[in-house]
Length: 290
DNA sequence: GTCCGGGTGG
DNA sequence: CCACCTGGAC
Image (cartoon, rainbow, N blue to C red; front, side, top):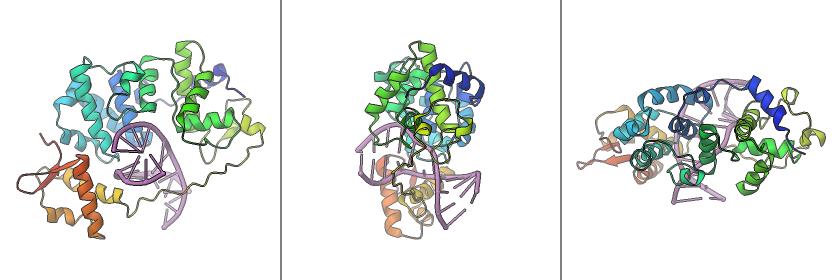
């Protein structure tokens, strides 16, 4: 079964959320910032930060002129702060080598730090209107259901999914870009993972519905957070983000008392990742303070 | 308390 | 394949 582009595009025209990075006048760099922030992070938490960032760092050179530590502070608690580091690196590369503009070409985008298969195509498509398949897990799930009649996307192999979505794209460039945005929107708001709202779905012939909505076979285990190394890293970083002067090791130790070995491991990994650094006199600070 | 989201890089 | 963060809904 296929997905009729006109039907989906008309639905999108009347149902798309008014997200700030979709408004006119948003540059490719600003779209790139939004896509990096939206990796792993819900729209509601990204939107206010993105608005600040667009004002503060409207072009890559503006961010490149700020220190890494300033960018980490502005990232706040969006999570996965290595994304902020990569975006800062990205800003430097764009300012130096790309005329202060995010490139339009997928292969070039893929060379940038923090930009992978999804983000490269998202920027090419949403910022430049390129006719390329933009495949995130929402899209993989929609295609799995509507086209293949499966409850969920199967293997994480993106290659087959890229080909699937390529085959669905309208020929016209502009319609193709809207179609990709619409597929993502449908997956995010209607064809959701747990409780799809099929009553609100604009697609008249879904293979999964036609097959009687067979259950998936996936064994998913919920990802824990409480007590993980990730949480420990977050606590340690909190201390340094909130302090504008380097802090003593003893102060960091207070941030994670439950398991000293885990705390040491987290601290070490933050140093290795380049998120924090040690001063000559043995104090700790956010990396790249200036 | 439990569930949830889901791309990149190593 | 695994590590990486957080807060809000229920």
